[in-house]
Length: 140
Image (tube, rainbow, N blue to C red; front, top):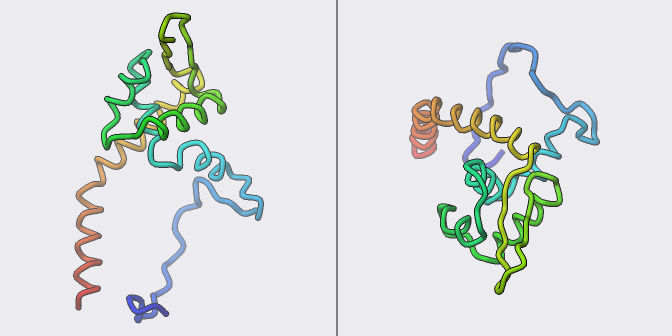
């Protein structure tokens, strides 16, 4: 056992049937796909910002909280474009003007992101209380 885990955990009675499970070693349940698409620090931010409409590169960069670098934003939108979530349009101007927007597939993802964000907000007090209790027990 690790230093923070010195007490044997009491077995918990079985709960409701899981909504999703990964019973195969190949992780066929879709969680790996989800993490591949959205598991990095910036992809969800990009999807959220593009949900409001078409944005030029610099506009998108300015809107993302936390200060994403130009290189990281480029990598993120390229990956989202490859997955079919973002459409990139280059206008033949000097210098070239590049715009990004969500595809239909990308827009379908926004409902799920909203549901996760709502869950996070709804459970923020319970999570804060659990963290406080955990930290207090770790100090004891």
